[in-house]
Image 1 (cartoon, rainbow, N blue to C red):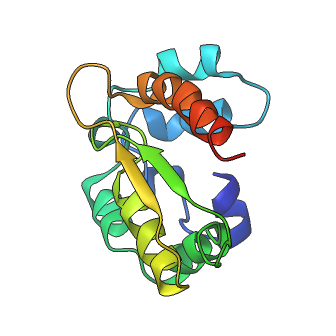
Image 2: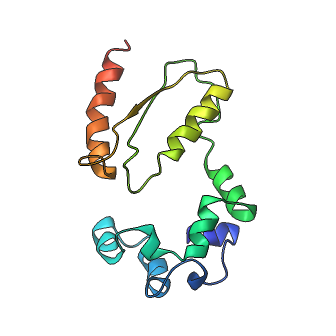
Length: 146
């Protein structure tokens, strides 16, 4: 939605979103709604939200979409001189664990050796459960780095 305004990824919402979301989702993400208003109005997964064609495009981005992704994701494109630890869950339903693998590859290409903590799949590995597990683990890890 905001990416579309910047990068012209689609002509109409129905190019990306299935009905009835093609007429509602852009308004939900207009900056005036919070999570408590947005989440109940979204389907359980991306397959119900997006068209099969756009899901394939996300799996294999090219053109404007690939340029937008690359422009927005330079987080791992550097060589930190401190130990790096990445936390995630291969069972996260909101953020693909492929992002973690891509970050590891980018960091390694710059000569660093990040450690990955994968909370796995199954119960307690959804997005917010992982966040709640990773925060105290991250704090404990930082406390041992002094």
